[in-house]
Amino acid sequence: MTLLTALAQHIARRPQRIALLQQVAAQGSITRAAKAAGLSYKAAWDAIDELNNLAGQPLVERSVGGKGGGGARLSATGERLLQLYRRLERLQEQLLEAAEQDDDLALLGRLMLRTSARNQLSGRVAAIRAQGRNDLIEIALDDDNRLQAQITHDSTERLELVVGTPVVALFKAGCLELVETGDGALRGTVEQVLADGDGPAEVRIALPGGQRLCALVEAGRLSALAPSAGRPVLARVSPAQVLLGIPT
Image (cartoon, rainbow, N blue to C red; front, side, top):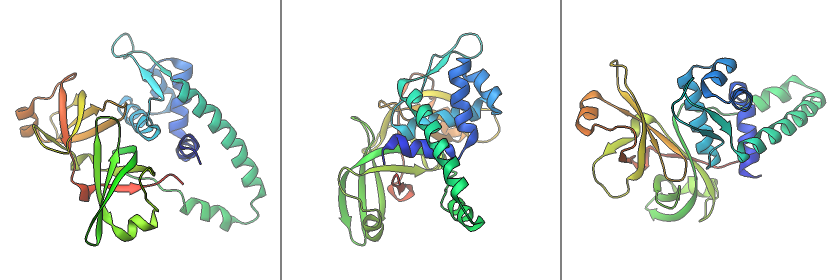
């Protein structure tokens, strides 16, 4: 299965995601697309960032500023994804028509997983290093960034991980720490800082390869680091906090 096919199946399980992409194509604006798809502007940004990360390249191309929050359009990959989704939708209709028992549909539902992890990054296994009963998996996200995940050796075997295997790395925004220096930190650029004075601020980070991160930063730390849009930033997550999945 190709990554694009896996992504089309992913959005098929989230109707608002496909509606958002369809509305971006029709409206040419994230603000108007979000309203038409029944999402808040923030939720639309979150959804687009996640889809771009899973695809490993932009599905939506944006221009910041301007009337209505800036313009937006689907990339060539985003257009292909919509076409593939429509084909999968037709196949799904045929499958449901062929299903003879309700148990079949219940089984399909149990196999569909959703996750609360804000950070979902696609990459490929670059190295596997044994550490006792565990393995340290190095994941290439782009030319500049490597992410590490610590999983059990049994998990490595169960996922059939080898160098070159495409994987999805998941971790919560609260596990991502902004740092001033440090080996193994991810290098990116601050894209947005969302702070409302109540709780941690969200710092959204663009990586060189087009993927995006989200970090939750407490007020004191935010004041010390003073991140602002356009500034370079380093972010680090403990390998023990990173979960791995593979496209199915």
